[in-house]
Length: 117
Image (cartoon, one colour):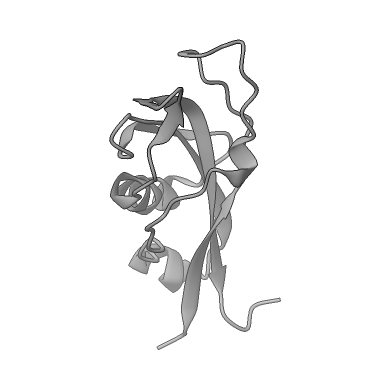
């Protein structure tokens, strides 16, 4: 069986609407716990590769809420990317000692076949 990888990279611009006056660098806000998505069998059979960006809110408990695919994501990669994003765990973001939600966090999942050029 062809070895495949599905990786994630953090790419985003983010705003915390709970505290608009404070700048927050989301590029440093990465999941404390994450696992790559499962490579879809149909994509393997077709030797498809691609990226899928998922945007979501991280709630005050550090869990992902309302994940949605964005941009030009191949339909075969949407479901595994959404499922993987739902499993992410973050350290809750604290402002003045209080945990707050972080909106518009984005993560791009890269689906690549090993050995493909």
